[in-house]
Image (cartoon, rainbow, N blue to C red; front, side, top):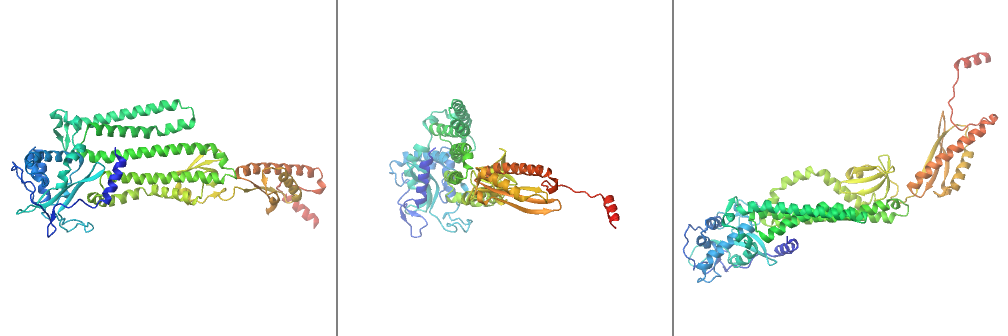
Length: 566
């Protein structure tokens, strides 16, 4: 496939306003005036009607299908060909132009007006040519020596004759060059005559046979490529190399399949316009998809490997820069995919000449279908936009510790449609991006990884909080993972009929260290409570207690005591 030359070629088309003038303009501007168009041609054997674009094309096509090249030559403007050569060259040029049209373009009969002035009476008001007479119609644009060449029909008026529609002189001048590229290959010309006959629709017999054979050959080439990469993967010394090969095997095989099909088709065959109109965009789309998948999967494999290796480091308090870096790489990956998708779509549209009037009309007529697809894919689009929102706002970065749905997690991946969270016990939580963005969550490492952890104990009303505070301060002084030790506190935050609630607060440098410190703090405080409870149980006179107790009052004894007191 000639993808990059095609891009440059179609960019030139956008800058190219139109073909050069054909002869002298008429006063009315509805035709071109010339001296003669084919004065040297022999009389036609068949019926010739060149009054309207449609009748002219019918004359040319029907004569060509019947191999009446003398009649078909009447539809050519041979004003640039010497009259002495026209009887010999006219039929040859007509045949070669027909072969180019059969293989390089799709003739849209509906776009050919059946009026002498070629005015589109039923065209949409948005069409700039609606209601305007025309003297020139472009049928298609072909790539010729990296420059745009058009196949046009024009309305010309020979001297003392009525205006007629013919293939323009510029088109006739380029027939031989176009035929060298888009005409039958030497392999096709060497085929038996019966294989070159039309089978059905616009397909020749050889096309019906060659298409499945080339496809089978391309599939075999893709299979060999897949197997070859599999063997390379088995002998790959590094895990990252093996993972990259494993991820690109399928898209690379697809690329080999498309490339083989395109290469064989280009070297040996030139298919008809109907086949090329379907295969051209399909080849371009599949090749772009395969190329994009290879690039994206290589980046995915490297990023996934790096993140997995460094995820523990990313959770450290001083790794904010690294978290930003990996998140930016992930965001750049998603933006690159969007750009690649848009460029790929543009390439496919260019391949089908969607930038021509017919293409725009087809796109406009498909507007309702596009709305239906957009409505059906609204959840996917919402996830993609939410993914880009995370990338820009950085509400969550790769490696951030978050509390989502009451689960302590680390952000492991941010994809287009989902966020992958690694729960503290190594489970993976897959959350749609739109749900992740719309659901409130705690980001423990957004600004500062330092986190204050608390332990709450329910104690008896008679517990000595000062003694517990001393035990807590000893723990804080010994603990190396406690930061801001002067901010550590012991507070009584509540009480009820069963006892009081005492809270112990200390800060750690990051959530992981905070969790470990919190568990040790709870353990140490429970040990202190049990120890102090045991000490007071040996001196009942002080009647102190730490562990909460339930008190029962026997109603019968209470009544007897009350009566005795009275």
